[in-house]
Image (cartoon, rainbow, N blue to C red):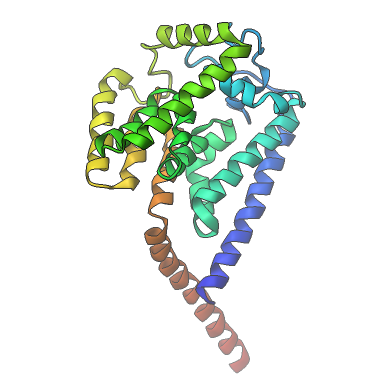
Length: 296
């Protein structure tokens, strides 16, 4: 079996697994049980938060609490009109498409295992990973981390360290532009969101998370981001951004799909060799069994 045929087989398996996961999550979407860690327990907030007052019950660690900017909620407005199972199916499918773009066929299944907790919950971690990868060539993508989880937006220090001021300006200008446009329609919500952020500054550890507060992690995050920029080690940037996440739990490791994407060619070469070895052994075993059967 050739390398190309192995890639096709693995890719087809990945597509079937992804479709099965979407079907399973939609089937289990109702009835929704708060605090159950059922399918979409994070995405539920994106669907259910009232547009006129999304932060009425928002606090870090609270189930179905909406914690991101008004811009993200407005972006999802067309989907929010759908039923919850349909919203969850489309949202999950979108996350899987983004993961496939990051991983490509050969690495999709391994990275799906890594990202499964965040895909199951419907969190935006995979989208953050995509923003990091995209941000090197399209700096405006950094507006997404800055207007959702905020502190991962420290990744723009990559541009400052490398004195890429034009790219830095694009990232910040895009963020300000989004704020300005959405503020025309919902000016009060930005003040509510900023107030929520200020009230949540000490809530960087919740049950099941890494018990190291954000304020202690941020210096290491900044140092790692700047070191990665200085050494031009793009794959290291997502690790620095991971340290800057408001809350880190084991599902947050899905952010490292960005590191894999940025080193994909090297990793695929090793993975190709491994799969060729496994399939080669399997084929030799089948051939030996067939020979033994025919001789008997």
